[in-house]
Length: 108
Length: 125
Image 1: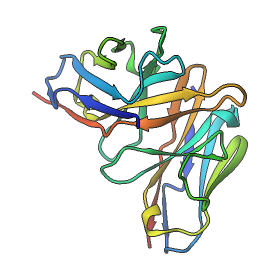
Image 2 (image 1 turned 90 degrees about the vertical axis):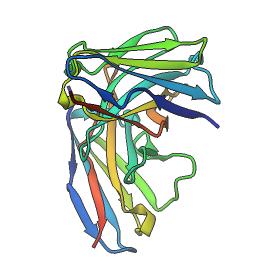
Image 3 (image 1 turned 120 degrees about the horizontal axis):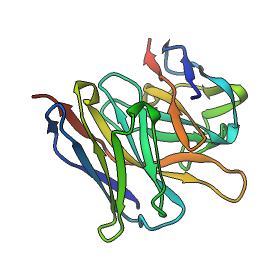
């Protein structure tokens, strides 16, 4: 089973700052199967990024993602108040789905 | 607009079977493009994928559930269901249903694009 490790666990930033979130996989994965989700308290997760770098419909361009192999990154270029949330990466492989442990982006 | 809505008991006794249904509107579970999926999240913890089913009835499950999970689809009611047997307190969580897609043609992305609001299930005597 492929393990996804997200770091840091918590990121404390001011609005307007840049956020860089990491997702490391225990073995090399296809970037096509790497997705990112945002979850706010009391809500279901929302798809942000598919295929490691393709924004989902309606996702603002301050969200970007990249990566390959075992290292993937989600970047929020300038944090808006509504971006403070928990972010999860997700991998698909061998007909199974795994999620990372999440990174909480909180207001400093 | 596609919407998913979970329904089922909020309280289940230990050792019993948890049963949840996800009602799909705005789309058809008979669509061959999608995988109908269950995910859960204990309070304050990360998401955990439970499993999925496709149109042909092929299922895949998280090995960690040790064969306790069963997902089925009812095309006549446009819904799909989850049964989790022999529950313990560790199964207490918010349970989400979701629509997953494996895009084609290339590139083959896989992601969950529509989620239900979640159903809170507690396991307690």
